[in-house]
Length: 94
Image (cartoon, rainbow, N blue to C red; front, top):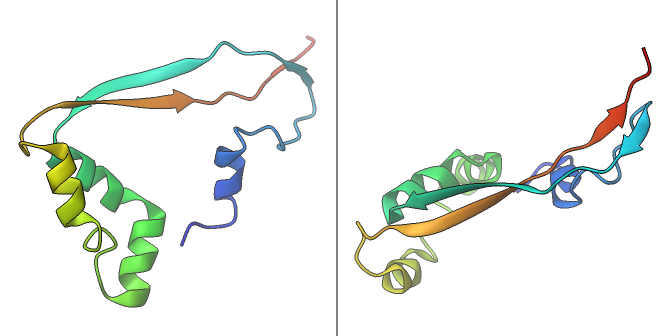
């Protein structure tokens, strides 16, 4: 249920052409501590989750929710969540 342009993110923008000289970038991460409810809320913000919900009239998390709850442990327990940040940068001569 992801839109086709989602592949740009999955490929870390490597296939995206920009009209500048490509430059290497450092790797950056966003690190958070989340509860199970925060993870649930985040997944439900995805465009793919919303498309699934609209198309099938059911929550996309429902099939995995029992196992996810069991694996998570106490629902208020905090787990580390790390997001890579992908950059596509180029040199602009002025």
